[in-house]
Image (cartoon, rainbow, N blue to C red; front, top):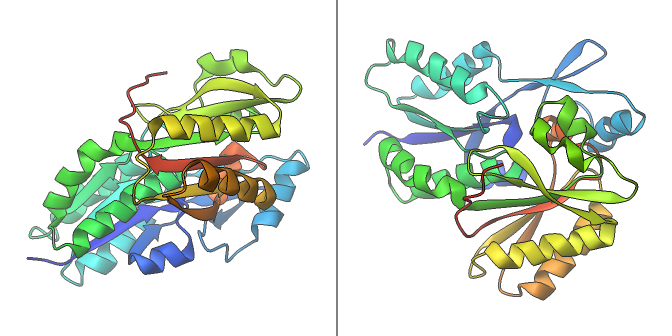
Length: 293
């Protein structure tokens, strides 16, 4: 059986530690500020989280690109030339066109590498939700499964990842086109913190509004307890340059769910440019997501 390389993209928000631990590589998207494109590195090699989020705090807009086709060709070819099959776990197709672009590139490359399997999977998630699908793919690979077997295992599991996130404002998400326009009625009332989930189709959908930061963190924990499988799993706690709130949330999660482990992640450049500074939330496996916004 051919060896398998697991790939993802800049939307996955996997830390350098997680990329190395699970032997996952990724294709880089780009951030765009003042007309300059910069590769969206998950290890923050071009700028720091504070630098990115301070730009946004100052009222400036940072835009993003999907994975460029040449980047797909570069990374896919790197592993195909080593005789490997590929499983690419991409951002939800409702949030990025990258997985579709990857599929087109893969189809073209199949002519040159007819013996290879190149599987491009719509994770139906972003941020650590996407990252968790990639990690699960790597775990299946390490169990000896083929690229096709990994794909078959992942597809029914995608909707078992639960995202529960609060943002300071819906403005960034709406401008980036990453939240449904029908949710505009949530507005940005003074002190109101929207709670967002990823629905069954992979769209970001506000489902509740809570007054104040502490109340929003408590609501995240309450919602998490309703959906999570608390045994033997990691709850990923994400934040957009707000480590203090993330640590408070971590403590609340550990108190409410003492059997789980936790892992803190600073939201990466692509997702960060979309959600804005101060975003905090959790990702965990649990009940199947059936909600459709």
